[in-house]
Length: 84
Image 1: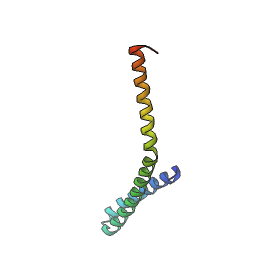
Image 2: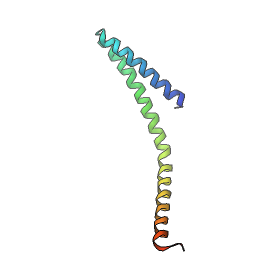
Image 3: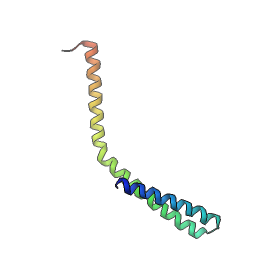
Image 4: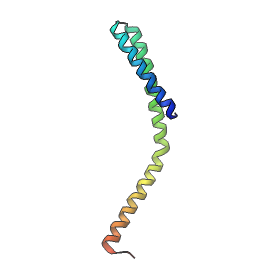
């Protein structure tokens, strides 16, 4: 999802939530249930998008973490034993 799509999904969810309050106030339980399903669909879409980003970035983040840890270890060794 693009940033615009993410923001649009949140905006739609905010509007749906407002409509849910109206449905609950009017005791329109069937309408409320339908709105809840719509919100759940948007939440699932955002969750799936987030999972896709994590799948792509996790290997890179693991590699970056390993590099950072190796650099820290090298610095500690150099500090303890001096540069070779």
